[in-house]
Length: 73
Image (cartoon, rainbow, N blue to C red):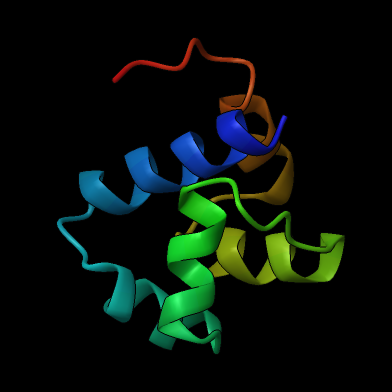
């Protein structure tokens, strides 16, 4: 699940043309933590996932639904 969540966050972030630093700033998170989420070395809490969804301008349920999409390299 962590890999799929991180990949979903990365896809949504890149679709906006944002750096990890920019997304981290919008979500009030540390940039290095943002990298850990995308690499699936950290799994965010539900509250943090909600911050990410809000920063990415999607609903939390939409962000979670992106986890169901296949992981591509």
